[in-house]
Length: 460
Image 1 (tube, rainbow, N blue to C red):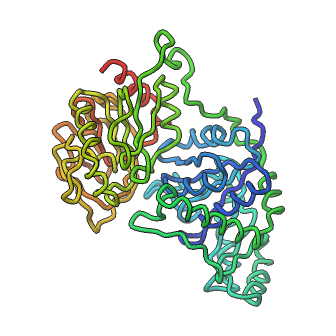
Image 2 (cartoon, rainbow, N blue to C red; image 1 turned 180 degrees about the vertical axis):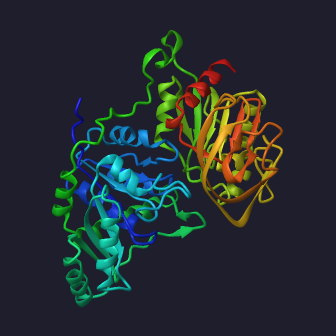
Image 3 (cartoon, one colour; image 1 turned 90 degrees about the vertical axis):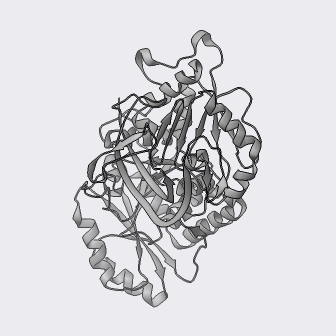
């Protein structure tokens, strides 16, 4: 079959801090305001930007990470998210050609653009240059013939004269200027130790920020030209089928007897904002009834909870409130003691510890957690050390670490993962039904993890 072309753009930049998030989110909101159904995507493992994308479009923000999921899943995951949409906007990561360290183009924005056959709009911070902008754009446009840079948006332009000089220089580069944003009108989005503050923690203010981004893009960019560029994209290379959380063949969705599946509680709210949409879709496809709850506000787990998923987020910011919720901490400890499946990643790992920065947590793990000055960041190639509720021993998965905390000890008697490569070590905890680790993983790369978890919920 030939897939129906989804009009699409990739918003990239020469480096981080150039204004990708402002432009990408503003474009999403501006196109949505025109009545288009816009599909939002983010290259890489970042959880926070997709929250702003969702606010801009009214649709779930989705990640496209060729390291976590493999290059072969990028186009299918994109088509899954973009199904039924009029246009898709993909925000890049870091600089256009920056990817996983030591892995060539793997997980770079350039690789994702090629896998999608999507034109690239390059956002350039022009605040400290004039004619040199042409050399910069020419270099990026000619570096990889497989990457099609369809236009440039100039950011932080100082004056009409500055804009004139930049446009004159770019005439020789052969790349059209599709927008000019003035530095006199910055959009304020607060940050802290791991980047932007998530939408869930500042929804009203975040709504205002997204509206400001949309206004900036509307006033400074040629939306008609950008939409035309998006519509110039042909079919996605390779004519892939959209990804589906429902496995094909004999492993189809399992609900014995057609009755309701086991209830899986998924932590959310301001303290636990990091999750990939595909995880919930996979759990549901495996037969679970997924019930979200907020550990900051609810004093007990949802009735009938058979399994618990606690993803990433910022428990260190809310340590006092989480600690004060003693009834819920006791309920989580009791669930673990009963042997129920619990999957915890990063923030979830901290929540299961005995304490976090001296404040009591759930006490499921005989470990303590604390904030540090050191940033731990990077992709990890991991293998399951032993059997757990998520993986059989020897299962290989790729993950990502991003935190400024430390857990002592870093691994239990039965570790969750053995990390391969230069940073060889074991990390995380497996005990009875608990799988707790610093690694963020994307279950689309190993859908058996969700099926295994739900099956354990049925039988534990």
